[in-house]
Length: 244
Ligand SMILES: C[S@@+](CC[C@H](N)C(=O)[O-])C[C@H]1O[C@@H](n2cnc3c(N)ncnc32)[C@H](O)[C@@H]1O
Image 1 (cartoon, rainbow, N blue to C red):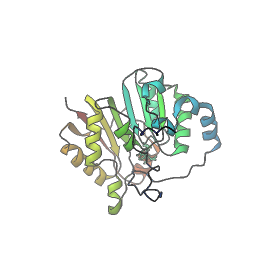
Image 2 (image 1 turned 90 degrees about the vertical axis):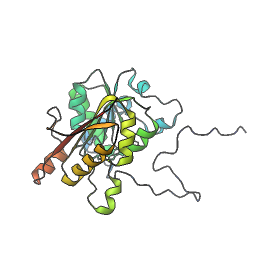
Image 3 (image 1 turned 45 degrees about the vertical axis):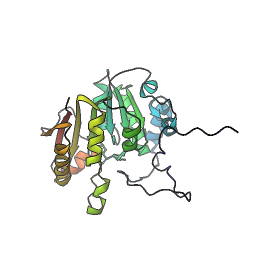
Image 4 (image 1 turned 30 degrees about the horizontal axis):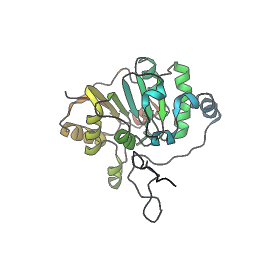
């Protein structure tokens, strides 16, 4: 029997095992949520997942390439945590020249997004449900992302959960590396202390320059933004660019 070849990438989150074969504990930026589809989500999934959802296992292939899944080469935009796709569909529809990769681990959100993409006539988006942090590390080359969007990332309020926040020094270094020089990272949050953390972390990353900006008028108001506003929180938009 021939020797098994070494995998080209480390195991994805949820697939890492300890020496005893138990699942490794991992610090992830998301929590598992329900996976039940509504009838509308089910219909959208059935209609579009074959064309627009990249199966998780695909990223284990040594020859994985984003352009193969889009069927064309085009500059890449990456959204992390696209939720139900309100921003994704509207922004992608007006950016037909870009390939948009939307990461969302919550399947009902992915299914709902598919319906919104169809409605908006945006066929330039591919959905991926593999952890976006792992994916940024292992599936993108340095200087390969034209724009990065993280709108209303999970706030992880409790102090002991702050380590799960997406915007951390290590992730900022990774994002800065993957962005093309001049490429923008747009963020929004409705949590004042997370906005402060974002500014502190991103200001400290030497390859990024930017700060708090006016609300990005192209960004549609999402469910999470509405929830925040209704609860009396103010919204902070940020924009940083990758220095040459
Ligand atoms: C608070 S919601 C915001 C959704 C959307 N951007 C909006 O504004 O309505 C954050 C989303 O990010 C997703 N998420 C968090 N970390 C992620 C990761 N590492 N990879 C993929 N999705 C992630 C969660 O599943 C969740 O749906």
